[in-house]
Amino acid sequence: AQSVTQPDIHITVSEGASLELRCNYSYGATPYLFWYVQSPGQGLQLLLKYFSGDTLVQGIKGFEAEFKRSQSSFNLRKPSVHWSDAAEYFCAVVVTGGGNKLTFGTGTQLKVEL
Amino acid sequence: GAVVSQHPSRVICKSGTSVKIECRSLDFQATTMFWYRQFPKQSLMLMATSNEGSKATYEQGVEKDKFLINHASLTLSTLTVTSAHPEDSSFYICSATRDRADIQYFGAGTRLSVL
Image (cartoon, rainbow over all chains, first blue to last red):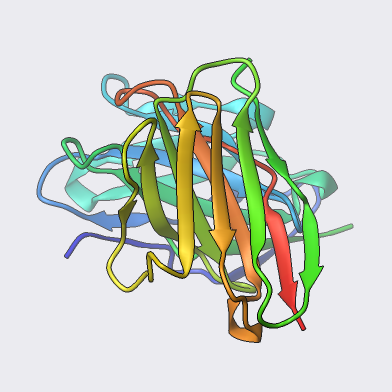
């Protein structure tokens, strides 16, 4: 069955430090890949997406993600974390031909220490 | 552009009553809307997919008579939780797309608490 794995449930980083959130997927074909951020009690905001082409994708708020087909991964990175980045981050995939349904990972809670 | 409004943001109701949640696309026509449920500190689980003018498609394990979904227009979908019970307490989030190739735009969610 298709699945999205975010191995890290919680991550704590110091403000100004770099960040990498991991995401792995299991599908036969290359899916469409997304990263969303959710602040407490809020909906989801799209950070970036990958459909095809350049495997390094730039998003909003200084985030980027790299698609690695060989590793079935789509890790999210940020060179320097700000305190306002503290939130829940979800990786998600859409399988082509799957009716545009999003399958979400379990999420990674990011805490930023000042 | 592509703003999705969800109302109410929070609702508290008594057990046995029904609650309606609205999801509106404010500046685009949404051919498809999705309804998700999110338990505390968990991921989003897709409940159903609704297309304008047709019956919703429910995911396995979701009771269609419990969670009534109506997508009467290209800008409005509603989720009605019928005869709500405490176990229905959750965070419900909707999303909308303009077409099958579009990304999903999310509402801010509705916190339902059933007493």
